Amino acid sequence: MKLTGISAAVVLCATAAIANPIAPGEVQYDEYGAVAASLSGSEGDAANGAKIMVNRGKGNCVACHAVTALNEAPFHGEVGPSLDGVGSYRSEEELRGIVANAKKMFEGTVMPAFYKTSGSIRPGDGYTGKAAEEEDLMPILSAQEIEDVVAFLLTLQDS
Amino acid sequence: MKFKAMTAVVALAISAPLVFAGGADDDTLAIDGEEMISKTAAPAHMEETGIDTIISGWHFREDDTQSMQTDSFDNPGMIFVDQAMDMWSTVEGEAGESCASCHGDVSTFEGLTTKMPKVNEDGELVVMEDIINNCRTERMQADAWKWSGNDMQSMVALIGNQSLGMPMDVAIDGPAAEYWKQGKEMYYTRYGQLELSCANCHEQNYGNYIRADHLSQGQINGFPTYRLKQAKLISKHNRFRGCIRDTRAETFAEGSDEFRALELYVASRGNGLSVETPAVRQ
View (cartoon, chains in turn yellow, purple):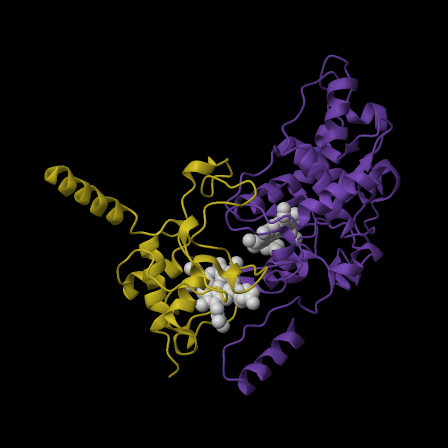
């Protein structure tokens, strides 16, 4: 009896650990589109976030946004606003929500959702042009990568 | 180009944040001395789009790319037009015919491209590639050409070049109406995991840079275009396929009914612009 109780507790802990990166479908957005808790359960790594932002196969955020701090990577786009200073006027929670799914805050925005795996039309298998199986669609960025990007955005303070 | 750039420099000096000079340039396009209609009033059906001027993709390219298109001798795409001219009179297939044996001089096709795509007698929407392959398989009893292959696109370009300078004028009413509606719906559908529609890029953001690419209105009056990067002619459907693939979507096939409908709709957004086939792109 006692023993089963213990193993049950162990199992519970294990599932809690697995559920720790919050799945894309489970993210809680508040009414403004912000997300309170870390998606991965861990802190973000700003240096890695900067790499993700310029990587074409990952965030490729500079395709649409100018970011002076990332000027080493060439060709910043002008589809979205400049992100200079965004860490001073946006909270961590807001930034997490915007990167995970900007449409929760900006209705109909052209900014893609980076942590969403359902509801898109004809989702592809990456950039191959071939169909993806809905069940194995991965978010564009992982929970930890979202946290890394958010950590980097918070370093963008008004000078 | 010069004037816009100057205003941009002034704007830069005044406002501190870096703003890059977007938009179409103010140059005029003449090919072999003949002026093209490369900017004109948008057709009536575009009223709800907020676009009042339709603009050729030429205005969004760099000066050196632009200049290659102004003289047929400098236009690398014309090599393919010349090759198609040779094929025009080459007998192929069981029937012992060439294009020339039925149609005479290719100049008899002057104006045809301005009306394409169109609905045929059977009520089907057809594009130039369909007409060409139909002649090959039915009348010449030769093999069909591959949609985006050199032979096919060179012939599309040769026929298109007969209408150089003439304004696009596709029909969108009558039997074309339902196809046009289908194409329009596709144009506004946000495909793929990135959830981006043609309109998100080419209607809302033309003139803006997206990474290193200067977004145009996505007009097709210059197709097939000669792409310097690939050193060959690019078909309309190949371009559509690439744009949809880039939204992390399952794309449609070249020569699919979906792309025929989309081609009609996109062509209609260019009604009034000169045919520039073969245009030059980077």
